[in-house]
Length: 247
View 1 (cartoon, helix red, strand yellow):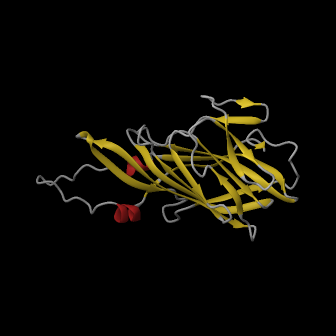
View 2 (tube, one colour):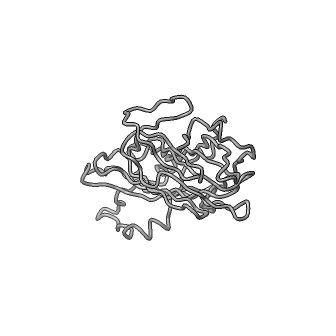
View 3 (cartoon, one colour):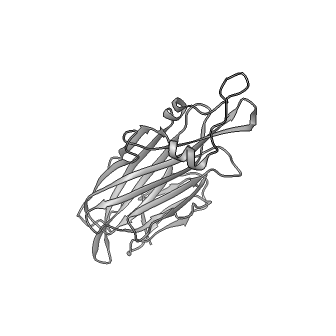
């Protein structure tokens, strides 16, 4: 299938997270000027890109279902970088929809192929390569450059937590490949939420780090983005997309 952009939008400041996770606002300086902070405009210049890369219908133990491949990219503004983020995809329709499995649950340290078994369970086949490239119907992904931890198998919400590598403080900007298997076909509806934290040096340099929380919102009043995609009804175990490999 042709990739479909689900979200390509500016992010919003998160006042609630600022209050809960941050310290109280600092008082003005002696001369009446306010202390330095990451501005709302800087937050609005940060963007999130979420692309539906592929949807593959499957026969899972004789039951129709599907495998979903997503690509998520965090796009910081100016000197900012993302240091943490939490992406949640909550499936709402059809009634009774559930996630069979998702990945990565823990981001691997090597280049991998995505594997899927006949129960719909996902895994990674380590290839030991340093770069990604398509081989036949398989796709090798470069290693995840930050920590990614997923949860939600057997439930409706899928959640991935991203954290900047403590050994390589260059943020979360790269593409992140995310995968789901579902025991459903037809039109799927849901909602997507994202919260994150950005950082940049203050005027005092690396010893003066400024941080601010942000979130995704269809509007400032609605802190989520609607989701809709289609899982075809046709079986496809003999013609899997380039994103998956049977094991």
